[in-house]
Length: 111
Length: 116
Image (cartoon, rainbow over all chains, first blue to last red; front, side, top):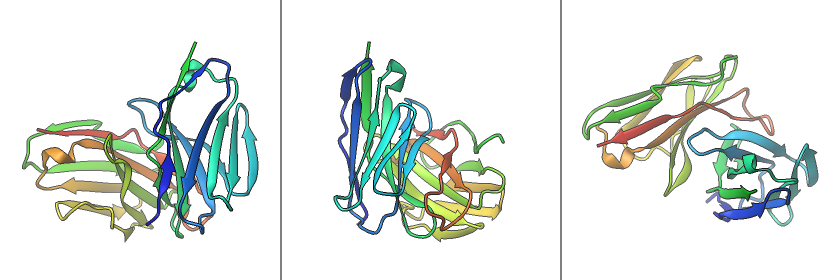
């Protein structure tokens, strides 16, 4: 059974702080990992993808991957109220771009 | 590009009625996915197609659900007969190509279905 686990939250952080979102996965063979952001009432949109161990930075976002520990995280620096959303971790398996999504972590950034 | 297009955006129907959801993937994408999202179960993959061929329908909840992709630019998800527990947001997503590590799925705006 392919599983992706996330803390449902809510994770509450003050504006300007670092938000840290975590995800674990069960399939050791997974090679591709994604973070999607979903605002209330909207569809998921891709924020970051990561495929290699280590860190990948894009603006205020940093994705971290540790395949040995089967762990992937997303850091949001200088959090803004507009970052308030649900963040979905997704792991790809199989040869046909099949994504398994976690339940999502709700982030609330308060002024 | 207009992105993934779904219709209708909202659907309210009565139990027992047939419901048809429609999706137009991004032009040139050859993988298409149907998802269902509820508060209880999160985002679940129902079925996906590659080059118009259904690859995995193990997520389809029961025989009341069926999906087709008659050509590269159109897919339908049909529920017949519908039940109140089918109420959810149904998303369609498309992806450029198969088998490539890290290909992104682009989601449509979703169809909000309410079965009374």
